[in-house]
Amino acid sequence: MKFSLGILITIFSYMASAKIIVSSDPYPPLIYPNNHGAPSGTVPEILPQILDMPSSALTYRFSPWKRVLSDAEKGSVDIIGPLLITPERAKFLVFTEPVIRANISLWVRRDNPKVKDLIKRNQPVKDFRELGNLTFGQILGYAFGEDFGAFFNKPEVRKVEVVDMGQGVQMLASKRIDVFLAYNPVIEYYIDVLKLNKGDFAVLGEANHEVLYVMGISKKSSLVNKLPQINQRILDLKLLQKLTK
Image (cartoon, rainbow, N blue to C red; front, side, top):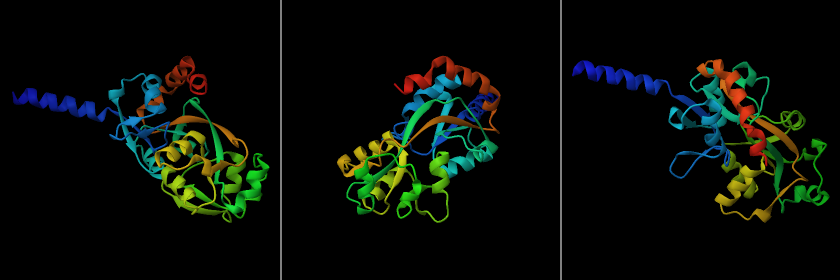
């Protein structure tokens, strides 16, 4: 009996350690914990297909984004995202084929006098130096496209640290920041959840920047060896086309 119990404990311990750990910050509607704490959104729906694993084989961990990146670098999580490819991240991650096409925009409050003329012009911002007198919400570890990133990362640009997207929308609503850069459905989700008036907010011109989100796999994860098969499944399933219709 003791022998059988020992075998069962060993089996269950192995099964627990064999779980794939998925990590992200809350980024609804793509990936976030629902009211019961269960993972929800587009990513939890497609990951079992991409990885060719049952949902039960995946464990989700939600953390601030900077910690997500740190955990992937240490190898304590297997796969993170959605995210953008950057040279810094490529040091400790390998990347899948794109899975989501997103429009990233500069969101402001309509009643902010600092952006009144920019809103009235109703054109995408092409010269980001026009935004030099504004204060931006910054989520540590986030990356941006080359055009905006080159401006945003300058030390003289005024930035206020925010923990996550939800806090960023709250700070924009309360005028503690002037601009918040985000994937449109994420902003719209929090505006709805926080019961804010969407009409109080505006995008500076049309959607400013289209990006392709990928998933990042820690170079210390066993999933690295499966990357060719993962990418082939993404292509075969035509996920990018389905998710952007």
